[in-house]
Length: 260
Ligand code: HEM
Ligand SMILES: [Ca+2]
Image (cartoon, rainbow, N blue to C red):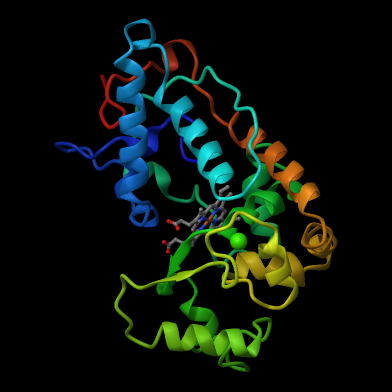
């Protein structure tokens, strides 16, 4: 959603340039993930007939497909031919990424600005079936939520107290919590079942069930894994077309972490 699907997020900061990956919203992106793409690119380029023919943006899209498939989700064909972007700045991230506090209108507006529907947005949010979040991203829901409620009333009470004990006040900022408390390492539809039980970690997750406009989609996918997998595949394919660089707007990087 920043600059399009052009691997601008893999560029390392250098000299006077603060790159995209060093924006506060991106600091938690795993170093191992960047390393994997950089190594895959080097492996492709080590084959003489493949050298300088595959972009980092395409490798990142295929690596994403592979990690989804390896963790139990669908495998799908990835459209190819993206070029790598020519700019990457921390400043360009401002206002471009969805925030965990977003309501349905804010989510729909941001995803809609990239040609993604509400259905696509709900399917993509299903990626929160794996991985983890730092306490600061949802602490507002379990401490001093509002004048009326200390804790967000849309949260399951037992889950809320578990979150409080995993994230005490003044918790070490490096502590992270599974986003799917039941199957955090499996790419399944349990994310949607969690939402039905008030176990969505972010406001932006739980709102998909509490807002009547999106609830029926959550209910459908909670009970129908193939339907979720199909919708996720369709939405990822659309996401992979966002802001694709062609012609002089991009090139094929030699090293994914640096401009040529
Ligand atoms: C719908 C709007 C979205 C919001 C508000 C959002 C927000 C967040 C936040 C706040 C985190 C935790 C970051 C941290 O504390 O380290 C996170 C993690 C994550 N998000 Fe999202 N996200 C959204 C959509 C997406 C989409 C579309 C995908 C992919 C298709 C995605 C995949 C992930 C993954 C895999 C993680 C875990 C990362 C890890 O474990 O290292 N999210 N998201
Ligand atoms: Ca899961």
